[in-house]
Each structure stands twice: as C-alpha cells, then as structure tokens.
Length: 348
Ligand code: SAH
Image (cartoon, rainbow, N blue to C red):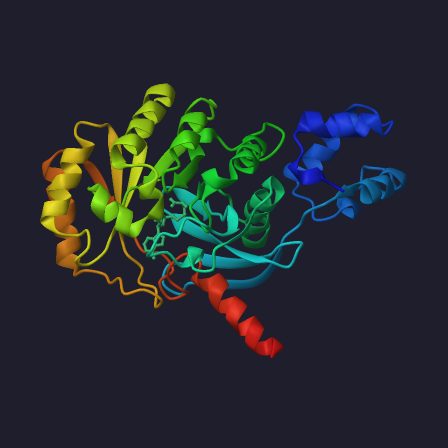
C-alpha cells in the first residue's frame, strides 16, 4: 500500500485524480496530513465518509506512537521513544533554547557507520526511515507538547546521508507551503562525512545547514574513531564542505566531540585551527557522552575551556554544546537500547 504521508502534494493529487476524485481533494487531504497532522482518516471531517473509506483501502497512513516520554527536571528537555508501524522503536528529543524550540530526529533504525564512541551504531543498521516516519517525529512532538517547533536537527540515530532519498523527501515535505512550511534555514543535517552525498546535497538548493562530524584534526585519529574516514580522508571531506559553502552560501558547522586523551590536547586544538584555516565556519565542541560499552571518557572542564580558547585565539567561531537532559539518559541511542533490553527481559 502506498504510504500517503510520504507523497508530495502533486503526487497525492495525481493519485487521487487517478481514483476519479476531483483535483482540489489533493490540496485538502495534503493539508490534513501535513498542516493538521491527522492521526487517522476519520479526523478528516470535511472529506466524505465514502472517500475516507476509499483512502483507508488504498493508502497506508503512517502514524507513530509515543511509548515513552521522559522530561528532564533540569532543563525541561523531553526525550521520546516512538514505535514505528513495524514495531521498531526510535528516539527523538525536544529541546528549549532561548532562540526557540528544537526537535532532534532519527533518520534510521540503528546505523552502520560504526563510530567508536556512539551508542546508536552498536547493533548495526536495521533500516532507513521513510519520509513519513521522519515527519511524524516532528508532528507527534508538536501535538504532544502543544509547542511550536522552530528548528529541526537531523542528529539523532542514523546517518541521514545513508538514507538520502527519504531524507530529501522529508525536507521537501517539511518545508512545503501547505505543510509546516519550515524554512530551510531552520533545518540542520549532520553527517559523518559521506563525500559523494555532500556534493549532491549542495546542488539541491534546499538552503539547509550542513553539519560535519569532524572529531579529529588528523587522518590517523579520525580513522581510529570513525571507520568512514578510511574511505574519505580529511582533505576530501573538507573539499566537499567547501563546495557546499560555495554553492549554498551556508556556513558549515563542524562538530568535534572531545574525548579525554584522544583528541582533546592543546596540540590537537592548534592542528584543528590550522586544518580549518580561514574558513567561514562554526565549530561545535561536544564533551563526549561516555557509553559503557567503550572506554572513552570526558576531560576536565578546564581542558574543554582551554581547547575552546585555542580555537578562539585563531579567530575561529566556536561554542561548547550545552548539555541538555542530562538526567534522562545521556548519549544518542542509549534510551532506545535500554528500552530494547527491558522489553527483552519482560518477554523472558
Ligand atoms: N550520523 C550523523 C548524525 C548522528 S550523531 C553524524 O555522524 O553526524 C550526531 C552527533 O553526535 C555526531 O557529531 C556524532 O558524532 C555525535 N555523537 C554520537 N555519539 C556521541 C557521544 N557518545 N558523545 C558525544 N557525541 C556523540
């Protein structure tokens, strides 16, 4: 059955006229799906019962179910575990910043990129999410919180550029005028550095922000932390980022997770400054979130500050990511893993 929430307005109109419906039904039902964010065809009260039954038979309406919602007592951050139609679970996060509310979504169930410090990749990739499953994370969070969503970051579980076509469809639907109409500027896609897809993305004219997970200033260290670096070296991936900036005029954001004794020495900070040279960019330092499966720890606060100072000395625009929701399961992918474990235990 066709996944109706993943169709563009034109595709939906085409599908409905093929069923003998009038053209205006396309826009009407599209509005129900993406403006009203309907959970069922029954909610579409200005659509005749007869047509609703036809829709029910012809289309699948993907709706996510929140199976767990945790609220941080420290900063109000909410973490959501959503169940997908096939029973898999994914996690998403809602955060409140002074500049607005942000939702962090997952793009895949699991991940196959194998970054050493990341919990999301420990069990490998199950599958990529459909556009409707990515949209539904935003829609359900909007409805459950009753709050505005000002920006969306694709920084949850999964490698978005490893699920390219669905990601593009998701962005086009989320920015569509008859849907939530988010601006491209309000969307950030984070990648571990799949070079061919970065070039492709640069040519799509979406106006979104690209974030690159850098995590090291030399190829040796990066290869140790991120298997993808064995395929694409630093020169290649930075070349792709430069192309992205040239094509879109959007400043690239570089993420750098600080790991004690691995990449957090002042020498690494200087090497990073050299590597980024005169680029118009932004560096986001993330104190690593230790996962128990790996022996990576967080350095002292002074070391993190010192690293930042070195970059600033070289004129680099740098921030330390504020830790959100520290009391409700740390790193990406940990909530889903602990839920999976407790479900297995209940099953036994
Ligand atoms: N696959 C994409 C997006 C998902 S992860 C990517 O690699 O960019 C979002 C960011 O969190 C990435 O920079 C990732 O490297 C980082 N990250 C993952 N696990 C982490 C951890 N335990 N501590 C700190 N940062 C982590």
